[in-house]
Image (cartoon, rainbow, N blue to C red; front, side):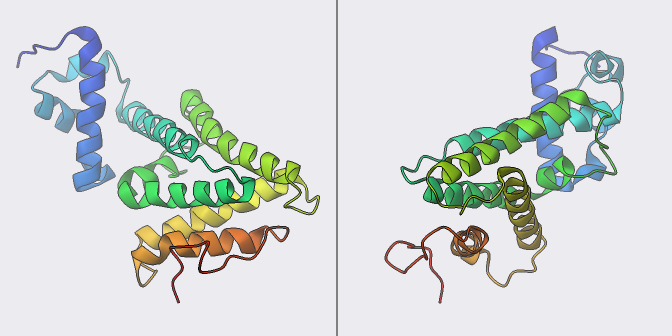
Length: 205
């Protein structure tokens, strides 16, 4: 096989094609051999960029966390509690749109913490957006002086579990996810005002 890729382009194209494989066929389909066939390059060409399959999967997961961070940062709300709710909704929407990538990102058995430092850093970067929104809500007196660290961990656990239930088909209607995410976020934050139908267009009876 021959390649028309420049050295720098191959890494980008490999990640794009690996994302397609992951989205269409799941993590088991993502191998260096399958990727080489799709790209019409030799396997040694890919080994210049990825030491092994784990390295490729880690790069995919890292890219996922970077995209998640961008999606969370894109949430713009004037009110700190509404922004925190919006971040929860954006998080769940990310998982719904990319379920196989989401599962890979949090697949501790495939990609254990500490094995891929860049991946760990990207994950912490996404978590930092949530932490900042918690800090802002505290500053706005929404959280009754509760500790920021446990609140951030609880909020992350809540949206992560909600996302898992959604993409695994355990919720009866995925369209309810935005309204339910807003509800559970407000239940988690006792200092926040109750939601009503006028302020929550996604409310589901």
